[in-house]
Image (cartoon, rainbow, N blue to C red):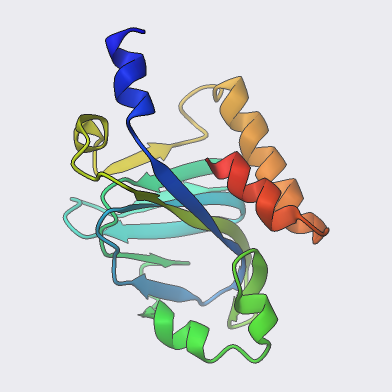
Length: 180
């Protein structure tokens, strides 16, 4: 084996897809951050603003884009700069239908305005000090205006989105494996 293969295979991770978020403006959530985890968002409809602790400026993201917060940093995701976000744990704690708040479920939140759909999840690393993980930039944003996406990424994101929307039995497992 070559050195790159050795390094990549040494990264042991577990993934969890939190679910599909159906937001309607105004909406905003603050995530406290999870050391030794990387969080990801796939924006499938609408737009969002992501503010990451330590970043110079917020990221504007739109449908078809992917964001990875490789260091598990504290972050805010919301519909606009004017929206005051709420702690995610508090909002999730108020879920009327607990089934929809479980991993792989559909979570609805917001004030009834413009809609946005996101799929989110995280990766946990057995060894966060792995050189490959340490070398990643804190934020990776695959924007739709940066040319055509890699075919595998576009296909994977579409398949994850479709699988989450299907509500079929086993969708959570399929989406988790796709995230891996």
